[in-house]
Image (cartoon, rainbow, N blue to C red; front, side, top):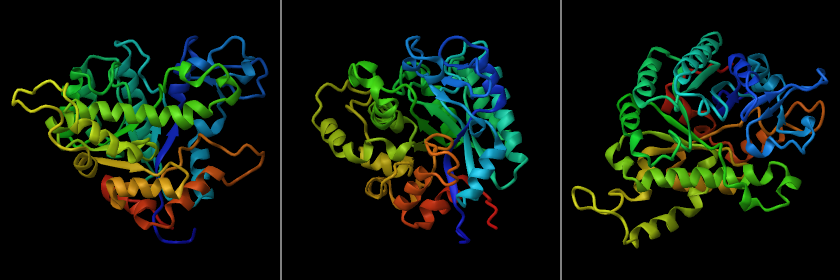
Length: 364
């Protein structure tokens, strides 16, 4: 990794100390479960399926060690894998669960904390902010505008439910307008998955495999498709969206979605008489969308490249998730898989992120 190519991790998460304190204060999902044995890390309960009293406490959710909250651990991970710059973001479930009155203050607290962390590690760290999506839209817009006084904030992370009912919700219009006007990048990321019933009665035997491997990509695909079908990307044609996990299943289903749109009779007419989205999906993907390369497969990365263009695909790790299962393993198999899948593309490894976000990585 002695190359002078800047390697930028566009998809890497953290739970700042303030956020862990918030989770620790709760007793319903999401919450942090401290165990009786204080020598073992607490368990993060963020999915309803994790909160099962029939499961022993030490087996619920996932263990949260220092890698989830420590910037020192984040920087050590970067050094180990030759990563020069990371764009950190709060991991799911963000602030979606908070009462409307509490969201704005928590968003300011966490976003200020992220800005300070990045400022303290100039050139190494930038961040995507979080929004108080349970708050009234005017307060969300206020936070979007406030973020422009934070030079290390390079966009916002957004869950697939938006304000609670999905990305085709008309109440989002003022938020789309603010994001378009400010040219704030939207990092679209899953959390809620699919109904647990689709995984069948034996799902608990497979841990998180079905929700993460299949539920997350389908959740993302449905969310973005609803946004597209709503016509929001026609009304706000300069929105910029980075879709997690190489675009979910959009690279494989874009043609099918397009065909269904072309043959649909039920679209209500717009005020101009047009039915359905005015721009076709391929045009929207090429003009409005970027994707990360967190997909662990060269074939899948190439599908993403064909969908949006090589200049709009960016390397990521999804750290601190998918750590090695073996004790004492320094290098992560998941990161190696993503690096191998990228195949040495300088653009995907870092240049695309640098140009899109205006980063100034330190390449030593």
